[in-house]
Every structure is written in structure tokens, then in C-alpha cells.
Length: 171
Image (cartoon, rainbow, N blue to C red):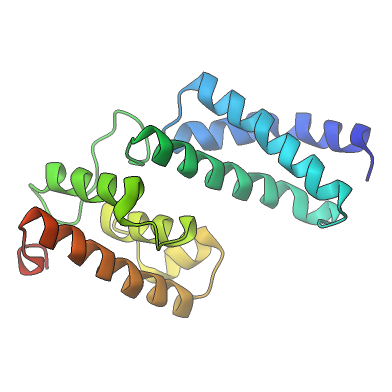
């Protein structure tokens, strides 16, 4: 795959990738910078022959999401979806605690969780998504979603214990 072809493909998908990162909460300049970084990583992968042409647009989104989650973790920010929007939390009145839990998970307490597992946790507990919906969004099967949630709940319980909260208050 040559650089010119990849460049055309990138330009055709650049707007969608920037929009996607903006929906994840990035400001325009951060989204634009990350989009360029996605292209560079994609180019490196294509030089190693790791990807086929058909897999490139979804791969761009996947790399973008993972880069953005890493960027947020390094900055100590919280991944809360649409910037400025209220969190559709499952448990009413727990907005502050929910933010603290996700901040703890993203900034260190959740190091044993992959970016995908963190996304599953976010979609379930913050966005209120059902398992089948999460499986479709993250592109994994429902069994893997359940496993990710079980692993994530253990981390959440540790955060609760550290903060002096009880899990029963949230169930």
C-alpha cells in the first residue's frame, strides 16, 4: 500500500475521525492533532503489511479512540462523552462520585484494565447501555462484555473502598 493511496483514504476519513474524537470530548485542536497521529500510526502499520485496505477505516477509529483515552489518562481528565453534556448516570444524584470513580480508573486505579474494558465500563455505568448495545459499539461479543464488566467492577469496588463508599449504595 503506497503513501499516496493512504493519504487519499485519510483525507476522505479525516472529518469523520475528527468528529468521532470530538464526540468523545476532545476540543477541535486536540482532535485534529490526534487525527494526524492516527495517520502516522496507520502508515507505520501499513508499511509492515499488518492491515488490509478494507480494515483501514475501522482501524482509524479504533486507533483514534485508544489514543484519545490514553491522552485523557495522561492529562488526568475524565472521559465523559459529549463535553458539557450531563451524564446520563444510572444512579441519580451520584454525578460527583461517578466522575471521581472514572477519574480514578483512568488516572491509575484502572491500570490493569485495557482501554476497551474501560470503554465497556463507561458505556454500561455512565451511558446506561445494555450488553448487546455495548457489544455492537465496541465490536466484541456479549460474553467478552460480561467478562470486561466483571473485571471492571472489581476495580470499581477498590475505588469505592479507597473513597469510603459502599457498593450497596450504588446497586
